[in-house]
Image (cartoon, rainbow, N blue to C red):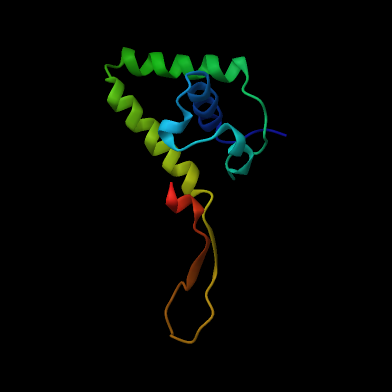
Length: 109
């Protein structure tokens, strides 16, 4: 099927090609566990090429390396936020939008 969130694939594969996954609390073994990455594929040359095109685009626009790294950090945070699971909280405290986090592991990154 069609993949969503292409930028996450490009970033993941590009950072892996640059040996930088750990800097962003990512791991090649847990790629398939992220909700926004629908398969546990191997990095592809096409994704890596797109990553470098985007990286070059940032340079053309005048982004400094630390600013580009901040973009990667924000994308990584979004990737982890997508992994947080919620469920309705039991109780009779009359609060609206009762929910609890059932998977806190993304919060520990």
